Amino acid sequence: FLARLFHNYDGRGMAVCNTIASNAFHADLADAGIPVLSWIHELPSMVNIFGGPLAAEQIKRASREIIVPADAVRDAWIDLYQVDSSRIRTARNGLDPRTKGHDAEAARSRVRKEFGLPDDALIVFGCGTVDLRKGSDLFAQTAYRVLNDPLMGDLASNTWFIWVGSSEIPFLDHWLKHDVESTGFKDRLILAG
Image (cartoon, rainbow, N blue to C red; front, side):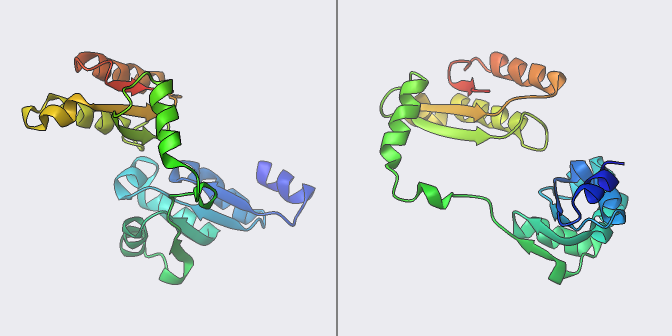
């Protein structure tokens, strides 16, 4: 319904479908004559959660082009889902060109001040919504291992882990907070939301 409504409103547009989680929309958009550009981030293990090969096939058939953030994702889609290599390309996420020339040390200082950290604090950032696709659970486990490892010594004593991103899934949010509380490093593993 929405695809036809969009097409009837202005047939010049296109749809950018971001993530495998939106795979149900690809076919409807393409069937309504709307060009689809798919921006897929997920490797096969997550693709399988969102419909597996059938979902990948829907995306492949509906998309004029598929963009992925890493060659590992590109190779997996070519090898496992037989996406023609001319229809899939890697566009790496990363540094924004607008940050070029900015004072990185001043930005670090502002972050340290905002979180009440020492001026020489080492910070490990994680970023993304709190869900299994982003690895917030692994981030908490990594923080625990680093901060609890006697071989890390002084390095660990001066390191903070900060996850920036909110949760839309109360169950996962609950367990991440539980993991943070149970590490014994609650002040060193910060969920910034």
